[in-house]
Length: 259
Image 1 (cartoon, rainbow, N blue to C red):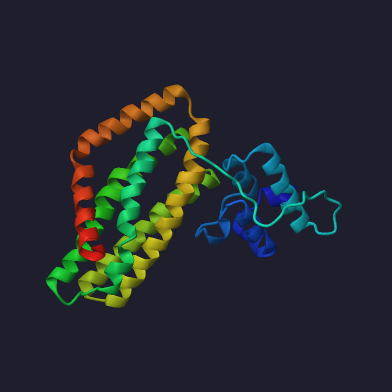
Image 2 (cartoon, helix red, strand yellow):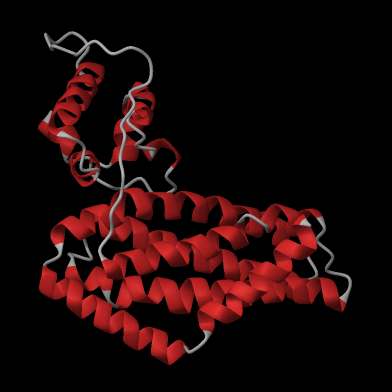
């Protein structure tokens, strides 16, 4: 079992496909993760499951990998309900709150792609305004706080942190392709990368809110928490009215597409 615990989760699922459904039963959506390099042992650890639930999960995983082994797998009826409530430290709560605005923007991407018009200046500007939100608010303001501040308290070469950082890199690549598509008035390219960005960010935010942030909160000291809060405050001062400005922008889009 040791070799599987130290193996990337995607590789383990490829070798033993039934594991994806087992993990889904515990609301661990590794099957849809675009990276999948996190080690199996880390996947279990970072979710912070109750001890009995973790033992039941590991029993099912072991049984799936070694079906002929004598393993006591607890009887369960239907989908396992793992009730989890998340209480974040003040600095982590700031990041979670920023996710709410980002989720409102990406929820509008299907509307934007459906009405995509790159033949007119106003149509191109709509996409460029959305990219301005992504580059300024989601990336420079939000992701930078993670990469430049929060992640520094952890081993940035670990599979867990690397996987989330890789999501940021892939998101930036989608933005680059969207901008190229707008410049070339390539509707297919813009729509493809807008949709891919939407899919990527939806999963990324869910995993951060429910997996990464709670795990990090459990592993930072009160002194580090205070340092983060102070550093986040400095970032907020540097960006000025960024929250209000982009809240107003998203509200305008919502009014345009949803009212």
